[in-house]
Amino acid sequence: MRKLVILLILFLFQFSAKNTFAQGTNSIILIETNLGNMKVMLYKETPKHRQNFLQLVENDHFDGTLFYRVIKGFVAQGGSQDSRNAPAGKAIGYGDANRTIQSEFNKMFFHKKGALASPRQPDKVNIFKESDVSQFYIAHGRVFTNEELDAMEKEVNVPLRKRIVKRYLTPKKRQILDSLKKAKKVAEFREIAKKIKESIEFDYTASSEKLEFTPEQRKAYTTVGGVPHLDNNYTVFGEVISGLEVLDKIVKLKTDSNDRPYTDVKMKVKILKY
Image (cartoon, rainbow, N blue to C red; front, top):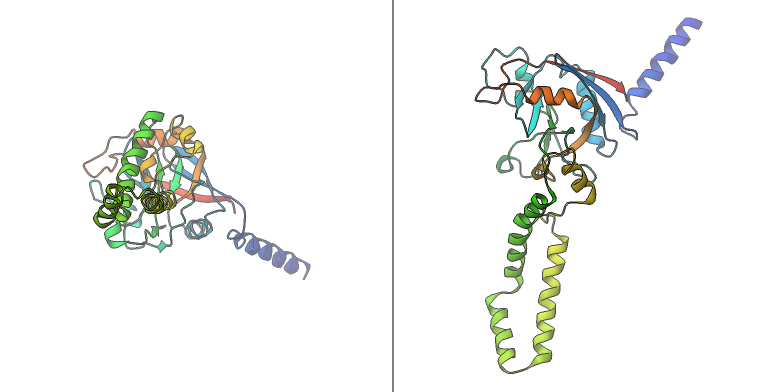
């Protein structure tokens, strides 16, 4: 009877541990490969992605799958079910076991080198940018200069501001302002111009399309590197905390025309901490 009680307590403890991962701590997983191991932290601030990923690991979903899409200076992507036991040269994609969930974009997390993120189908078939957590990718990227980051901001923000200006400073509004200017009605001119300017600035500042790298992003992208143009388009839900040298080995492999390495990189994923 005593043994039965002890076994019951142990079972309840294990069940409780496995079912608390949705509530509040960072989880740790281990990705074992034939090129070495990577220890990865899953963020508590992206609970849906963390919970789904842990559930898939518990079900051995990733075991035996490959890092099948590898691009140096970009990403190493793997975990797709159709990569398991795939013959050499076979093109691999999303497979039949895709599992999509709502995106969890968080400005705290971005595509620095080692970031763990979810791929997804293109916008034209996935307008809400839902993540496919049945597989994942790890950002590799490269190191950028501050000048390059400035240029990336301008490339996005200048056209954005022009579109907003066009929205408020319409031909009709221009005509009104020109008439007031010619009539030297300074007060009326300034009042209308001020309202237009305030509307433009409000929309520009509040726009989710505006690109403005935080100090943390700039520090990471100019030191360890990463893939900044993926930010706010794909959910980052974890990061490699040891074993980045393994990522470097993977992305250096020679690949075919589909970016699949000629040398298979198989994985086994286990949970170290819920």
